Length: 349
Image (cartoon, rainbow, N blue to C red; front, side, top):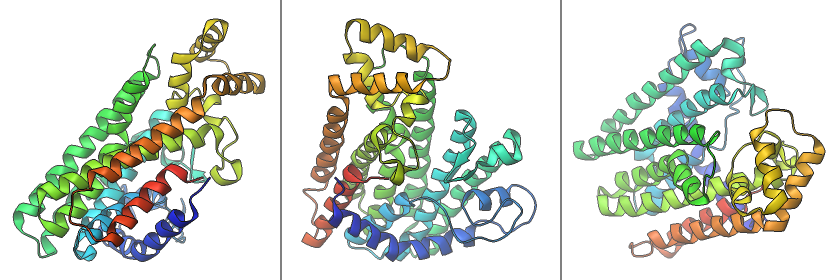
């Protein structure tokens, strides 16, 4: 299903920007051998647990890419936005360190998680340190020949959006034991947990390029829709993704009883004995069998959960495109933004 041209466009954007983002990150993370900083460097994929240097092995760095892309397509010099791009990546990774603790996950990106190696107290402290380094990094926009008002606005927006991200994480945890969560409530939650920081990514890039808050808000709204599309697609891959691409077995998120959008929709739409069985299964605490997972998949097929979720992702992508429709962008810029939307709803990993 993957849109080859869109994937190629995103790969080119990563190739264009990520070396500069990596350099900026290396410049702002302290090099001390003690304190929390080795844990930060380990989590970012720069070092082994024993401190041995390794090639950068971080994640997709989509938020920095979106920030720098927004800066460029809005007509600015993307180099001016590097401090913002680095701060976004640090905020995202601070949230991952804490998420791993909350979820009890012992592996991320095929490596042991920070808390599983150093313990919860040190991992919590390392995550907090990464957030403060991000705050300090966004302030470095003052070195990019930008108006003071732009730097202050950028810092404020980043803080507001990652507060939203934290609120969304709290909602997500609350939903784990809640009955009757609706798809609408779920989307409102992921609009915060995932959408807010992607909103910030595109808002900051456009703001730095133009110093025009109206344009920045349009880009930010587009980013929030892209964030929803990204998360919904992530939910699809967590159940139906190709194990060779995702590194997870088919139905992995079902086995974990993760209440992602397909499950929320399933619990709302299932009828009769299927509904009763599902609620019993998701309220239980025993390990699901293969037969349990297969039956959940069969009921999902019956209610059309996968098709519903894919349609929702594509609708969010269309809304993202519409958000910047009235802006004075070049045809090439519009093509780039559309390619991002296509990638977010067709990616396979």
